[in-house]
Length: 218
Image (cartoon, rainbow, N blue to C red; front, top):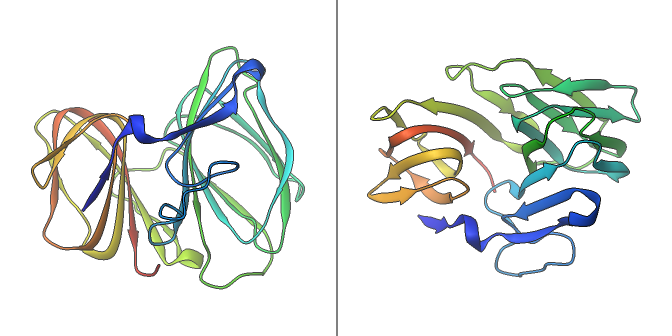
């Protein structure tokens, strides 16, 4: 198990434009050859957008992009004609496939925080696709078969426990709260990269929200 702390993440974005970013993997001008990916995950970005701030239209290709809103509202528009407003509890996936362009903005009146995770597809190419699941339940894993991956959202009360999926690769990101994993304390923004996960569990020391990726390839 490889634990990465919140304060180890690379800082990016454009603070003057109201954009603050924290990157868990190599991203943009920050390149670390030893931190390019884990399993299918090639990016795990925490984005903070001030009201009125956003990312202008930009391209993506050959990437599965999954977004989880922590607080506020995220407006999405893309070149395939999709438009939506995402709130906490919603899961959004943009399968960029052979190529798509999109815009992400905070058109609301309050600050926006979201976690965006990029996964490498098993096979490149194909047609772009878009999907939003509103108010996903803890008991409903979200499958991304194109990347051989499954997302589990876990919301735990203090003292509650939950099993870690048995899988070749598991990536755990703590959105908020505190948990213990195999004797290690994890706090907000911390992550654990687990290889050959088996018979592990997470225990919440305080109310917690977690994003757990179960991956069969990588």
